[in-house]
Amino acid sequence: MIGTQALIFLMRVWRDRRGQDLIEYALMAGFVAVAAGAIMPGVSSSISLIFSSVASVMSSASTQS
Image 1 (cartoon, rainbow, N blue to C red):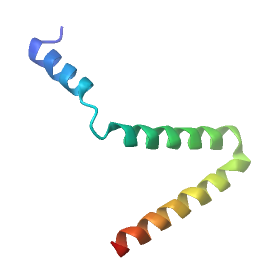
Image 2 (image 1 turned 90 degrees about the horizontal axis):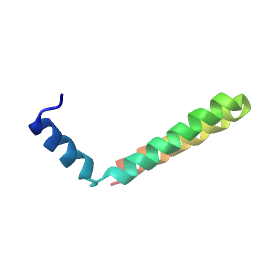
Image 3 (image 1 turned 180 degrees about the horizontal axis):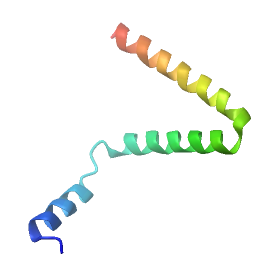
Image 4 (image 1 turned 90 degrees about the vertical axis):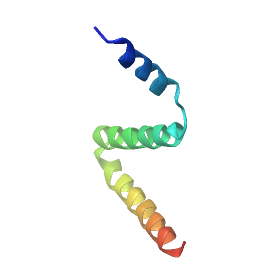
């Protein structure tokens, strides 16, 4: 059985919503991309190209800051 302290901790973590939205959207986008790549193999190369482009843009943006 879960102890009282553990239950209080779990409730506090469950209610804390700071910074959660961005991570959730990124995880959902990644999941959709992986699922689309698994279902439609022809799409996987396009998805890979998109993620590579995003990574390139993020890398160049971080060096310019």
